[in-house]
Image 1 (tube, helix red, strand yellow):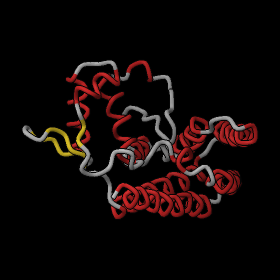
Image 2 (cartoon, rainbow, N blue to C red; image 1 turned 120 degrees about the horizontal axis):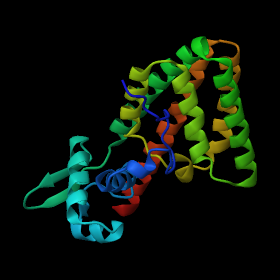
Image 3 (cartoon, rainbow, N blue to C red; image 1 turned 45 degrees about the vertical axis):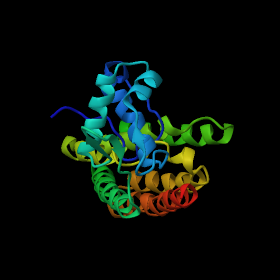
Length: 233
């Protein structure tokens, strides 16, 4: 099975070594998906294919293909007469998505605590330090955070689990820290605990910390979506 380079928490527009291979359909789909998951495209909003094509500098075909992919995930409805309409995400489905991510990332952290190699642990420590420095100087931490969790997932030694994380992560907003910057200090403290647990081979604590990483996040996002819905109505 091919290696899947995705972290458990897809935040920010991460640029990796495969970025140049992305198709127009994937590029458009990622942006539209993010807008829907973050509540920027609310339920009932119609997506104009021509307008999207102009925005992304492409033709209607990749935009329509992207919408068909989003329809398979239950985020939009595609109809011949009415076009593409946003279904959106409910508070219940948001909690469900975070619960799935919490369970999967918890297993990954537990396995990583038992299997992580010295060079992998060193890389996790380096990334953790870089995240703290970036936070202090006000730099973007999205990519570093993604790399931090990706390294832990890879240390779990299970390509199948990585694939499941990548699939579940598609339903989590990538720009979480942009939406809730107040979460950064809390997340850094959790990273401290996670690194310590990995270093001591403490799988139970690593799993607990990783799962807890998502609990408050789910509640914040649910409140954000509900507040946006009330404002728009």
